[in-house]
Image (cartoon, rainbow, N blue to C red):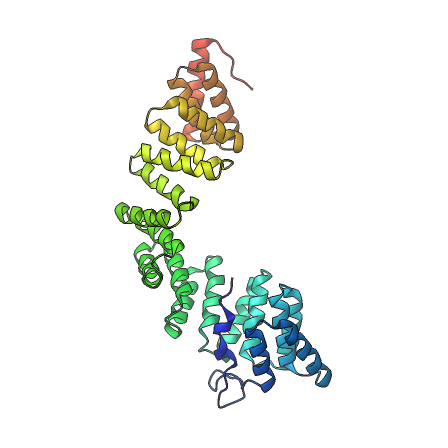
Length: 358
């Protein structure tokens, strides 16, 4: 969830003042903290812990020792322990931006979003030039649908660190979530200019192109992803959906079939391949797919409805009655499909004398 904290060395960088306020800059990094950073960057967390324990014996009020012990706990995935140590560090020195920044990341990993946002905000107050805090807070805003704030934070992160491709990607997602697809494409372009084979950016840009009706551009992106990663199921499934929307059922069937080969227990490709078969008037194959879809997802009402229609077209009246009846047990009774199904059941049962299943 968080950006690379190694990039946030500005939070500990030496400044001319030690008050820690936004106007004067971050607190000067101690000699001990510099030593811990070297161990941290070398991945020597065991040595970090030993040094922190020794320091705390010598000086139980050393906030840096609690802080770096918390960092070691976070590296080990023990965020509750990290939080305890970060709390003690903040208690001893409540003006250190790095303490708030790392504690914010621990809160985020524990899904305590409110406190995470508050800590990133405090870190920004004490060190407004550390782009990572804006980027991290932006991710929290993005994940919780606060899109305007997310865009503002990612924009500030990019202003401070133009090479932050993660914020371009995330800001693109925020724009896409606001249906501002052109702006999203511009941000994905930034990522792809630097990393032209970044498949996630290609897929997202392709989706944005598709939303704008730029189908050729969308297909070019999906095709490139599949060329780079022939087993990228997401790209194949999306391309299949685009083919379906373009009225190209044969290509859609081929792609949905590939998806099924990779994920045979996912009901969705069977449903959509069934729709593609209907477009080809291959009703028998469509019935098989809608049937398999309902086996994997018995609550998919539309799969029963589509199956019933195909059964009627194949003159499989008994099967159509069963499918319509099953659909009505799952559908919204006021929906147009439900009313149509009720009408068809009346017609079919009147013609055949068959009693609908209850």
